[in-house]
Length: 405
Image (cartoon, rainbow, N blue to C red; front, side):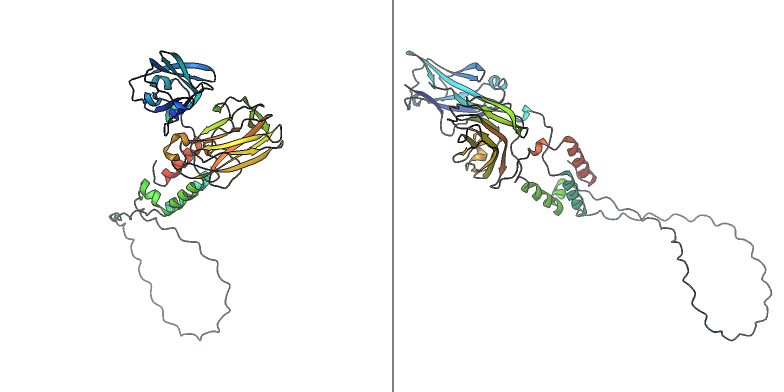
């Protein structure tokens, strides 16, 4: 008899490192019928990964689980999650009763995901537009900030003491006035004389008080609003995936996988022949927007023409398979997220890989996910480009305009 294990409707499917309040609701079935677990002596959750068995956790029979309907509640102990790095894990439920031990599922182990929390890594880079564009917009913003009123003019200083006046000379004797002569003919106009040197520059008047600006005033400035619009629109064409140049973890499925530099010396995923199930590489995205279009793109080829590659956005209605050739070709697909994507963290990752039944090796390189329905060329995620030095320059530019961070 085939024993199965599945998530209950609306049960979480992922848990973050350190989160000891997220509860998985699991259903045990036998031949597609729920199993009555009320007579169980003990129920144990066995956890492992690709390297093998890790540990077990006893499930309390007094928990609010609906044992009559085959449902159990699994809440991970904090010590368990603190020792599990982010990645994919396998799960089995061992039910011990008077008849012996039943293990669910009876075929391949059940899978769940442990994701990283905000403290799992230290920040190194930030995402922003080009630094020169930012400084130009900040200069525009500064021109819209009102200057302070001119301060009052200082009091005039007292005049210094007058020097001694020289002795006036004696007037000379006035001679007799001569007869006025006849007016002569007007002379020719002479050349224009050389322009005189400019006089000394007057003193600069007193400078008014420097105006002040806070974050509310800065963000309301027209030039800053224009910059914010540019930043919001820059999401189109931006690669939402990080780590596309290093495929060292997050493999999903049991197909043999490796990496190579097959495509123009760029890192590529290699899926070995004789794939028996869906397998690939998973990129965690945090949260997606509700009912929103995203475009997935990647380069791929196959050793055998007709083998297939696969792209999937968890949270979309369906997935896309591509029939490959033996030459490198770029494939794209427009995928739409679920209506509850931004409230359900299990709808927040992108998957690239292969389907079951391929006959030879399949190669996938330069994966990209971008917002919207227009595909653009591959580029790294902005957080993998901008450095802390750029951030220091931006901060200095804002401070020089009278703002603060």
